[in-house]
Amino acid sequence: MTIAFNNIILWRHAEAEPADYELGENDMARVLTSKGERQAKRMARWLKLYLPKDTVLLCSPAARCEQTAEALNYKTNVSQALRPATNLQEVLSMLANLETSNKNVLLIGHQPWLGQLVIHLKGFSGAELTIKKGAIWWLRQSLILPTDNSPRYSVISVQTPSLLLK
Image 1 (cartoon, helix red, strand yellow):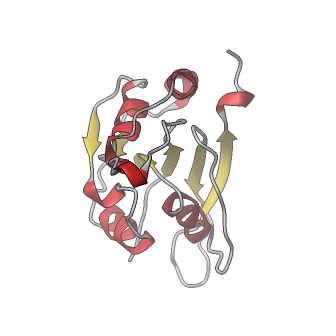
Image 2 (cartoon, rainbow, N blue to C red):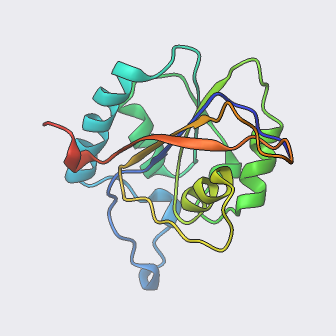
């Protein structure tokens, strides 16, 4: 499965209200906390400075991800492939089937698949990576391809809400 984007930007949803599963609360309906709203706005300000104009934004259907996306005020496409319980193979399949005329993609989603995607795009195996709530990982396709011709990505920026000025 080949993924060939110039830039893949991963944004984990900002801090959300906890769900009480014993009371039957729906994980998909969890909303951002007031801290999460501030985190999303802070990260959106940074993204607006650097995001390529032709970027496609794909978002999990979970309320907390849609709220995170709203802070950016950008055309958002909701994708069921990015839901909380998805697996890495489903995300990779969705990315491989995207129209590649747009060379930049921004995904707003969840752990653990966000961290797994970074590991995969870097060409590592057997490692684990946790992306903090509200954080952005920006990966750019390497100019030098490995011997198997599969694109590998370099991390060009990692931003967390706490690193950015208020």
